[in-house]
Length: 562
Image (cartoon, rainbow, N blue to C red):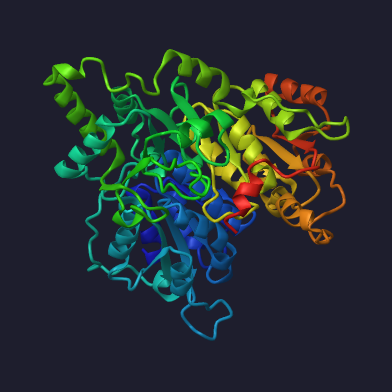
């Protein structure tokens, strides 16, 4: 057996069940070996799309996916998606053929490329160590939630696996959790319990680490004990869906009521959340007298974006459970605790009613700016939210439009929202939706894109059709790179470089084999209702001609960070 075949078969045995990519001569044999061993290969039309599909699949399933690419140009084509995955700590194994002869047209310094974008570089160094090298790369991806480039030199791939090959002792792995998932120290638990015991208006903000740790129920229990309100960062949207004390997403996508309540907190705890400028609106959501704590498995993350009064290193789920147990034990031994920590605090009947009717942006009145030729994106998003089934998985591209689907479209849980925004690249939304759709086949996949991002990634619309995915693709079409229009336009700069003639995106969708509809007013969404009610034999592209008189409400705040 040649090394390429042995490595492919071994990775499948370890747990790689989905491989995304574009096959060339250098990755042909290893990809076929994975397929022969039971993995599913998903052929993309561009390596960048394949990388993002694999990233999304890993986020939703919690398992490590693989990306398979050709040497040199295949890898460089995939770099934007790999960068997004690396910044998001997605467990992703990139299998890249490698040309080691400097005179080869395909030669580039692949390990340097990986390091430059935050991924880890490994190599199958020799036929004898091939399986051990592959196992090390896979376990690093799963155990440390890293994006790992496994370079496969062409000469090594073609060699025979020797009889004395170093055996690999790695075992098949389950879903990847938080890296180094240990609980906090006893002292740190006590200090956080002290802080929460003295709080009158505590707010918990849960982020990626809480999602990865599956900490919803421990955090809800602790919040009940302390009277805390619940919120999330954008990437963890849906974590507290259905909880009556949930404020939704903190930061730029928050409703006015949510922002008011977070800013009035006397204690804010970030659970696996960086508390960065996006989540805290450049610090404006931290009141002048608020005390801030942060819990994270990564010591370097504590206080990285803002000063904190208490930094706790530990797994979110385990730490929340330990703090709740500590407070419960204290309460059991103290008659003075009979009234409960929430007395006079946030968890009142009146506030519960305000949250029920005002925590969502869709509950905030607005002046509809639709004129019959273009639909207000708020109206579009609210009507879509009413039409879509509850069991959905939503993928959102980047751009001026992105706040509308992110804030106005609900999701059933944190697995229902796939947000590839760590690198802030447009063009990833459609591929994100493909990976999420394959990871959650029982849910309706919804891709929300701007016209710029959709056209940038449009090659993989063919992939949606070929795979038979019953996907709803909503394009918020303002015929521009809207973020730049609304960032530079008010200062009088010429906008010809970022505005375009109107594109008939519905016609493009039909050309790829999709059903399609153009939406200019709310009544045009009747075609979407009919598609949702039917058998959905083809994906549906919605070319939504949206109003563009002003930038999205969150944009001005966001651009303060540029």
